[in-house]
Image 1 (cartoon, rainbow, N blue to C red):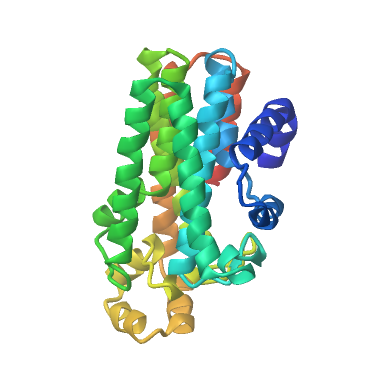
Image 2 (cartoon, one colour; image 1 turned 135 degrees about the vertical axis):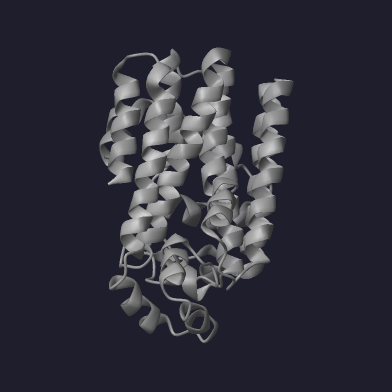
Length: 305
């Protein structure tokens, strides 16, 4: 469905991508080769897509909202560059990761540069509420990343894992729609958009957790587990079989995968996806009734299946 949405929103996404490139104009000309590689390996752009849908649901897609979404996408990519170094990842979106194609140094500095450009974009909007919102979210997202890195190979409780996920991937979805609501001057809906974004982000991430145990979207199977990141299916598996803790410690990945496929963990993980899908549907109850709301809910349903 994302491909369909990209086509139907092609005018807005063209404006977005043009603005994104204009945000990245380095004085160091040699860096343009790196930027071209990043453009070539860009992702699905789900955050700008849901942001544009929300903006058009509330009215028009404004220049300020476009600038805001560019900042979100810059931050998203910056976190990926840094994540791939931490995880020692060789691939990203079926391409060599930035650190693999160039070097760890280039990837770190690219993340820093993208962050700087994102901050510049946010400041250009000249709305203190948006600047403060952006800063608060960035602080919390960084704290979520720190928490994850300091708890590698540790099996958390389900509650703790969901809380951590809510402070990482889901929080960026929440920021996307929260900011769009504020910039649309629809204060009565901004809190609902914030919650809808967070629950949509939880659906997106938990599905990614489940799919990480199969060959999906060019991502290596068991990549999270091999990086020491314990996700929801493993936590549910641990509830059924405490021996999983020793298997994780001893890197017995194929044995873990075999036990997982015979357990109720995938089914229980899917139920969590449904729970967050239902919460997002409830958040959307008071959204304006139009085609863009329908498309947001259709995207939610597809992500949840």
